[in-house]
Length: 487
Ligand code: CA
Ligand code: CA
Ligand code: CA
Image (cartoon, rainbow, N blue to C red; front, side):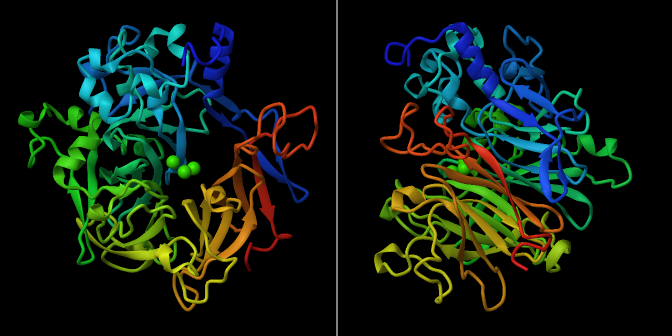
C-alpha cells in the first residue's frame, strides 16, 4: 500500500521475496530427539526471488502464460503463499499455491485479463506488498499474464536438490489448499484439492496413466495428463464429479473457453458453469487409510445467507465450520474406487459449541464442554484411522487453536477430544505423523498475532522466551516415549 505503509527499499522488498518459498531440511531422530542435519545434501531453499520453476501440462506455453521475462510461457520464478499440500506415492512433494493474488500492483481492469483477475481477487486494494516497485512482473498493467503463472500445484523432488520444481497445470488454477494423492484399484493416480475461499469448489484430478512402483521416473509425468473434475453435492446423498473438459457441455468458445488451457487457467468459472457446489471455504481434504473414505474440511463462511443453504453447507453465517465424509464405491479401505464418477457423501460433524442450541453443532452426544472445536482447518489420520484436527480461528471464540482427535468409526465416532493448545495468537497447522505414529509433527504459525500485540511488545515471545527475540513460527515434534501416540 504505497502512501500508507512506509516505503520499502529494494533490499527490504527482496528480503520479503526471499522469505516467500520453502525450506527443505533433513531431520533425523538422534537418541530420542529430532535434530536438523545441518550439512545434509538435501537441504535447500526455494524462494520467490530466485528459484526457477518449469511449467508443464496443457497450459504450458499457452499465450496467456507468456511474459516479457518468459516469452515461451514455460518458466516461472518462484511460488507464492503456499498452503497444505501432499506427498506422492513416488515420494515427491506437492505444494499448493493459495492466496497468490495479494502480491500484484496496478489496475487489472486496464488489461485483457480483467474478468479473470477480478474472479481471483487480483485487485489494487488487495495489494499488501511493494514488489512491483522493483520487479515489473508484479505490475499487472506491465505484465498482465504474470498472475496466471500462480495458483497451481507445484511438484518438487526433495531427493534431487538440483531439480527445478514443476507447476502442474493439469490440476487447475485456483487458491489451492491440499493436494492429497491416492491410487485407484487400477493404478490411476487421484489428487484431491480444495479452493480455499468462500463459495468456491472442491476438485479431483484423475491421471490417464498408471502408477509404476518399480520405475520412479515413469511416474513423473502422471500429473500432466488426466481429467480434472469439480464436486456437486446432491441432497439425496450422491456426490457427482463433473469433468472440466474442453468442448463438453458449456465449456466451449461461446463461453470464452478456446482450449483446455483456458479451462485450467479459469477453473473457477468452468466449475461454476458446470454446476459445482459452492462450499464454505474448503481447506484440507484427506483420505483415511483404514476405511478408505475422504474427509473434507470446510473452515467457515460468514457470508452464506439463509437462501444459500444447501445439504452440504447447511448453516447460514457458518462461523464454526464443518467436516464432510465422502464414500467412494467399491471395497472399504485401500481398495476403494476413488476414480468413480459418483460417490456418496454425509456430514461427519458440524463444529461449534454443542451446548449452545443456536450453534447448530452436531457431534457424538457425549462430546464434553472441553471437547468441542471450531474452524477446523488441517487434518491427519494415524495408522488406526483416527482423525487429528488442527484449527484456525478458535481465538474468535475465546480460546486457543490446537489439535482435537476423534474416531471416525465405531462407538467413538465424532466424539472429539482436546489434545493440544498453541501459544497466544497462533494458528495450528500441518499435523503429520511418522509412519509408526510415535511422533506427531505440528506447525505453529504466527504466534503473537492478536489484537494489541506488536513487534516491540508482543503478547508472547514463544518459543524462545528471550526478550531479544520476537515470537517465531516453529515446528513442534510430539512424542510418546517410543509408543504410538494415543496408544
Ligand atoms: Ca487455507
Ligand atoms: Ca485457515
Ligand atoms: Ca491454515
